[in-house]
Length: 377
Image 1 (tube, rainbow, N blue to C red):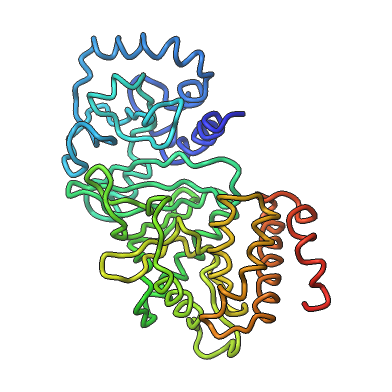
Image 2 (image 1 turned 135 degrees about the horizontal axis):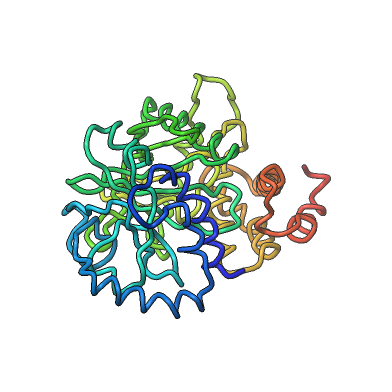
């Protein structure tokens, strides 16, 4: 199955949860999401142009929250009297987000109908915040152990925040835990690291809902960017300072003396240099205490290496570079190699617990690297 088909199949599961079929009104059977999204590309190309033309004849010029580079800014929210019309952007063959329908979307294909009644994620967030909220649904990549719906929430003034939805037992645990971690971090005297604030955390229709404040990671098409550009590089000194500050966090006082805390997923796409010189850090659902100092630095390097080389080579590189990576933290070369081996084993164990091995079997990428160090561990 192609990436687009995987994403759309997952969207088939997500949209009825966020916009329950029973809440839809009018024509267009929101319950038939699978038929309107996840059909073959051939059927879409053949039928989409005809339906777009018919929609244009019907005069679909009502405004909505515009989800692209045309049609005004996000702050200019106008009523769409249908309320349940959405568009997959930038195209159903390259699905990345689902946005409220705007008049100019007729050029992108037929509309997608979702539930638009009194009990949707939009009405829930509107009730919580006390003002009307519209959402953009991110179409997430497939085959991720921690995959969950991610939304952008907007009101009349613009972006309110980002919403994480726990829609499975594992995702609910991760979302709930991240909310707890972020509330704990709000009480920490952090000077280098900037985590999001929790704007709302609760349950809705059995789903865990976590609304987080946006962090100023730059702008895209006039709106705040959720994450840094993939090419963004954080200055080494700032990254080192952030790793050291995170390592010193003690959620419950002074326990764990001699061991460090770590973010748990300090990858290049989860961090960005802020405009004030501090480090913006997202996705705290893997935070933990009780690891050797330097795990976050190794994790960051390893995932940068994975962009350029296969897992086994990246693991060997992580081990070879451990001395230089951990030198700023006062770790000697021998201990750094042991720490790197410990980190790689810890990561493989996480993948095993998740039931998902994105790097392949550990026998292929991990064992050849750490087996020679067994006597040192």
